[in-house]
Length: 225
Ligand SMILES: O=C(CO)[C@H](O)[C@H](O)COP(=O)(O)O
Ligand SMILES: [Fe+2]
Image 1 (cartoon, protein in one colour):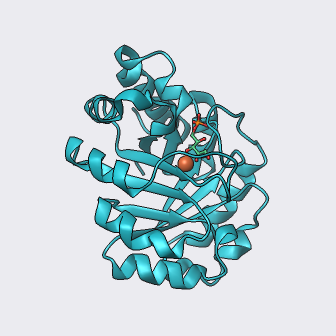
Image 2 (cartoon, protein in one colour; image 1 turned 30 degrees about the vertical axis):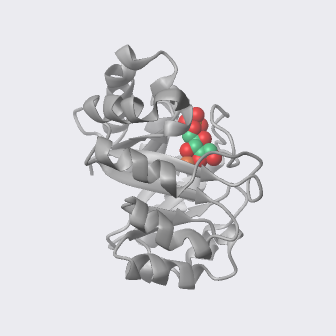
Image 3 (cartoon, protein in one colour; image 1 turned 90 degrees about the vertical axis):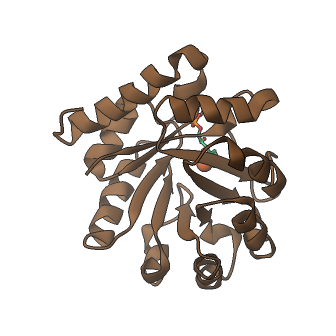
């Protein structure tokens, strides 16, 4: 199982987002992770569908759109039209998770479920049929640069068991670096989101930072990087 690396643009230079997307794409990113925050579901604001639409021509990489907004249903179509490939919603942000997943699939996009650190994996029990990706939040959503919450490793392992045999990606988001990324991969994650760990030293280092996480993950699951 190859681990995919998804740089989070949250940690990039917002004054030149297009350039930053092209740089991490050229540096070997598998997905481009786009964090949408509304100042209501989470205590921070980022960007909406218009910015994602503006970024779409900059790369063919998968746009992995993490919606931290409530309500979320009224905006799903706009994010699909903007060029999202995967749209993840939080069950904590909607009373209608099943409907959201149905709508996302109906729009021809992959449907993700992102769960907060305090949310039990049992919330997935009746949702797996419609899910293409589960995103385990390993920080409380809202900000980049936070420390990885180690208790999430057990949750990752439990979800890996829950989804065994299904075509569902298991992503981890928050505080991922080569060390924590290796632990996540060993626990069963196959997509690692990394913001600060990729962007913090500037564009000259993006390739090395992505490769370091990829190699650590591969080492942890016994693959040669
Ligand atoms: O969803 C998020 C925060 O809500 C971000 O994707 C996440 O925090 C990535 O940043 P970092 O790797 O710096 O923790
Ligand atoms: Fe995210």
